[in-house]
Amino acid sequence: MFNSICTFPLPSDLLAQGIHPISPLLALGLASGHVQIVRLPALPPNSSQKSRDQSSSTNGHGTVDTAWRTRRHKGSCRTLAFNLDGSQLFSAGTDGLVKVATTETGEVIGKIAVPSSAIHIYDLRADSTIQGVKPQQTHRPHDDYVSSLTALSPSETSTSGFSRQWFSTGGSTVAVTDVRKGIVFQSEDLGEEVLSGTVIGDKMFAGGEKGALRMWEGGVKGLMGGVDKKFMMQKGESLDVMCKLWEEHTGEELIAVGLGDGAVKIVQVGTKRTNVVDSVKHDEVEGVVTLGLEPGGRMISGGGSIVKIWEKETSDDLDDEEADVDQIQDDSNDGADGVEGAASQDESSEEERRPKRKKRKRNKGKNRGESNHIMAFKGMD
Image (cartoon, rainbow, N blue to C red; front, side):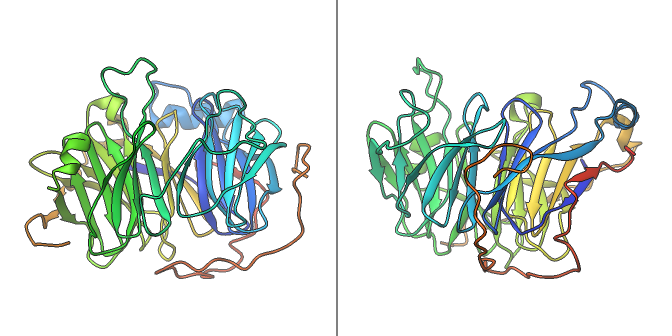
């Protein structure tokens, strides 16, 4: 289902990524506190892999190059997100700061200090720079840090088209928070640390440190019913990150799950069956910490000090190959519980020790941190 079309190194371990909602831009947050934006080649639509390779090699767009890079946080950068139109980039670090910068130049235009282990809701309609803004609401749905936060689909009666509820994971629980009502649901202890989550339609998913994938159907009401389906993805391997794939494009309900052993599993989820329809390897040593789907349909995975870009195979690429489909073991009833290249006022020379993560094998391989900030796609020289 997926082919790796590009691998490029980073000067430090990757901890966060943000995907631009419109353009082929990728923001990367590093353990050193640096944030950088890279430009991905824009591939022509509705063309085969072979024709895209030829086009990219002849039109000069076959490279990944750095737009800008800066030391944004004194601690490591842990979260990145673009605003709705992609004009601004928000970043959060272990220094307790959230900063907003212009996407084009990387110049910081606002920052605030945010306490940890809570969900803070800010109204950015009046001032998106966040300078001096205080949260309208603060909620603590988890006893520990919040490991993932995903917007639920807007209700049928919504007039704005935006969600007012968020599904979150943290500690050993999952929760739903409403912008009007506050915390509307908190689960019981699930018996393991919950590291990741995502949402497809009325289905909510959570991944645990022991390899269990949990699914609740029926939206918030289904979650409140307390009945979850539990599938063992890979016993003993943490499910560190997940994202949804192609729901709108194909009608298929697919999620990508990044594991602690460096694998990315593509899972087709359904009421009756849940299958792994593809499995690829991001790295033989490092775990997967970031996953996402960019507007062109390419999947981007990150972990250790490398980023990989994956493209879905077309009918021309498959050449009569049959994909192996493995059914996941269903455990539902087991009782389980200055900016480079742009102006910046945000430079710092202070270095920080690399953060240690559970089940992470660090510092493997030589010279992996060296990069010239330009990397050619395979077959696009």
